[in-house]
Image 1 (cartoon, rainbow, N blue to C red):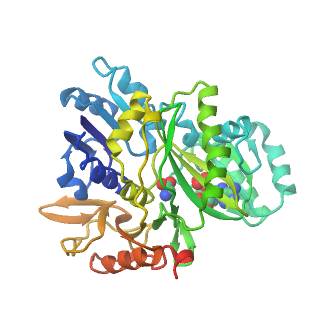
Image 2: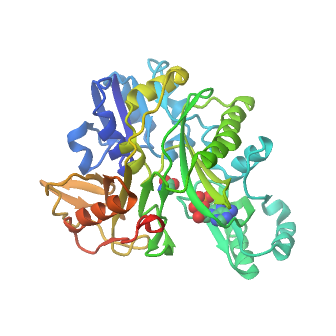
Image 3: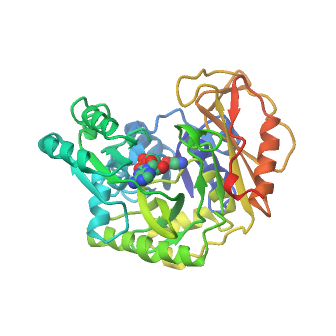
Length: 425
Ligand code: AMP
Ligand code: GLY
């Protein structure tokens, strides 16, 4: 099979690493890829949002399967665009159509989907300019803290956790009246605050059948002890030690199965990943969010733990035959520790040379924001690279990733030193 993988982050490096090991993959293309994926496949300098160029590439290189890494092309309808091109009608695409991608693309869509299908989530109300005054009254009467979510994609920045009513009213005004998160963000979901522990669960579905991948926990804040600004993710562990068979069964019965059945009942075809973000409150699972793709950096622990052939799973998903597949998982613990450019998630510099990438060790280094220039690997993003290690415990896996991180250098490099801290012994 000739496969095209879209994206350029650590998620895509981990996917490319796994795909390139499959005997079912005869040729791998990456658009655009990064410095770490250079040896794994043919790179094409095409943006993930340039649908015309992606379609031409698929035709020219006789691509059999396109795997869409990030959410933006999915929300913008890449599936519909590609499948309506002459000659691409039977292209296999991993990633939902425009409507299915609304599970991530619209918080309001996701909330009404959950409500309609009885899926446990925080209580909520939806407001816009049309019922602005009612929204103000609702916020004034609501217990604190309170959560405001701008509708539409906001790269993880459209969520406000407000500790005071004044903060909530200001955020509400900024979202609806000042359109701080764009036109779509003028619709706001106001949600009950849930206190608990977050975990991420990954489902691969063909729209009818599904398989579950290992769960993970990511560390979103920039600072040690989960302090400071939210980021794309500073590290992750898998498995999550407190997730036992009882919790896993609640997750599957109350959320995963109703989600797949709900898509079917609503007539929404879906082939691809559903990433379900959970808040576990006193042992009970509540959905915080859906994403229509894999997580980053969760993929960098989940995919290395997958012992099964990923391409066989994706092919079965594309053919609607996932019922025939089983997922084998490496029982060892994995921990990934991300290195970022100083200043991230606010302003940071790019273009610093990275050294120490050739040191021998048993960990995996996945590039997130790197580029190759005149034979050198340079930083090109806020999150630069992540180191994944395996061990019999999270403690040991975390220690190994921290050790390997210390052998890699670039200017202003920063890592959280406490990834997996709740589980360290
Ligand atoms: P989201 O973009 O929906 O993933 O939200 C970003 C982050 O905000 C989540 O990862 C949670 O840490 C937090 N969050 C979102 N919704 C809630 C909620 N209802 N209660 C508590 N925290 C939340
Ligand atoms: N790590 C969270 C995400 O990929 O959205």
